[in-house]
Image 1 (cartoon, rainbow, N blue to C red):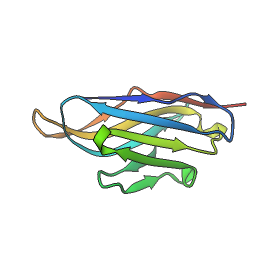
Image 2 (image 1 turned 90 degrees about the horizontal axis):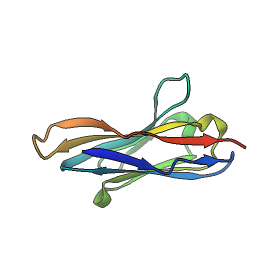
Image 3 (image 1 turned 45 degrees about the horizontal axis):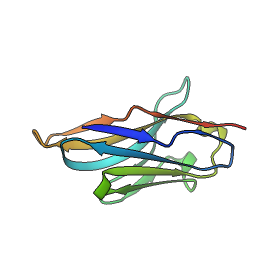
Length: 120
């Protein structure tokens, strides 16, 4: 099982980006998924999460600007980021709780990270 992210880029303040993360491999069940970020010199923080049923949760600093969604048919989670600010600059990591077909035990998987830079 692996997670592959895409969509990171350099964008001006006020701009928008859409991140994608697709899970692949021997997946038995794809449970909660989320996006974390880590800025230089800071700890990794949870930005947004979405349950298998579609319930969402956001950190206060991105509420009303970011939207997390998922397409279960494509094993993909998205993060639509609007009104981006310089303080949103970070490496964004995808996270998912997945049970694979070998033993059906739920494990946490991470993507490799994608860089988002907000600067003029």
